[in-house]
Amino acid sequence: MKILLTGSGGQLAQELQSILLSSGEVIAVDRTRLDLSQPESIRQAIAEIQPDLVVNSGAYTAVDKAESEPELAYAVNGIAPGILAEECEKLGSTLIHISTDYVFDGSQGSPYQETDSTNPLGIYGKSKLAGEEAIRQAGNRHIIIRTAWVYGNGGKGNFVKTMLRLGKDREEIRVVADQIGSPTWTGDLAEAISQIIPQIKPETFGTYQYTNSGVCSWYDFAIAIFEEAEKLGFPLKVKRVIPITTSEYPTPAKRPAFSVLSNVKISGILGTHPPYWRQGLRQMLAREVK
Image (cartoon, rainbow, N blue to C red; front, side):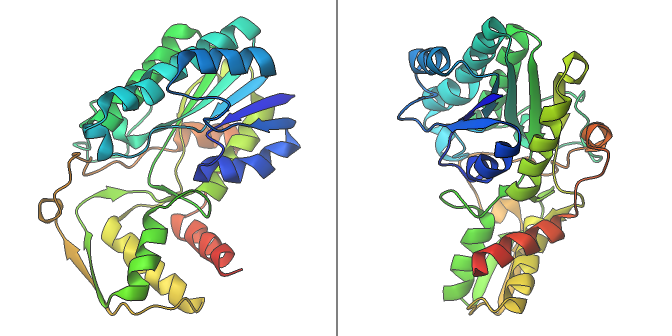
């Protein structure tokens, strides 16, 4: 099987590159070979590579910056996935596309199902929802996986790396405590994707959700990061983590207050529930030490 992996510089793609080798030949591309903001670049790369499977882990993920760069966010997140899906349909290939919890508005009090109404609050969420809809319009040969609060060892940065950096330099850190979700380690997400690949058939096409199990606030997550990092001997100066409200930390983009996703549907395919989020955190930090 020939697998085309987009966004090769990102944290999820870096995790996927080695894991997907068990499924076939992996051709990992960054924007120099496949630029998601350029439709012709996408079509040309797929025509050249002729993949059996496309895993689209590339995305415009700067949530706040998207508010001032809507055209670029929509090009990468909204238009590109539809083109990938169209090209996959032509080849009889399958598209696995990564989406987000930000397609929901966070007003619900129980975990979101795949079938619940979407209502994104900002440009990032709206552009990702547009991408989902473009894929569905292109045909059926796809698996969309929504995930949330993703962090990993690769890529440019994430919440865990930011906390470790701040914790090394500051005694006091303020963290939002009224946004609830499920931190998701790229190692577990990549493993789930690799387990789905051998099971791809018409009955498995559709939309799924995958996060690590369990829920917490960003504040809870920060506390856990420092507790686990301290055990591993990370150099930390931080003494106090202070919970604050979203309104005390204004950002250009509005974020969902509650974005817990139900894992029930994907657990049926995987045959097991996703690992608990703190377990993933430990594994990620242990790798950072090495």
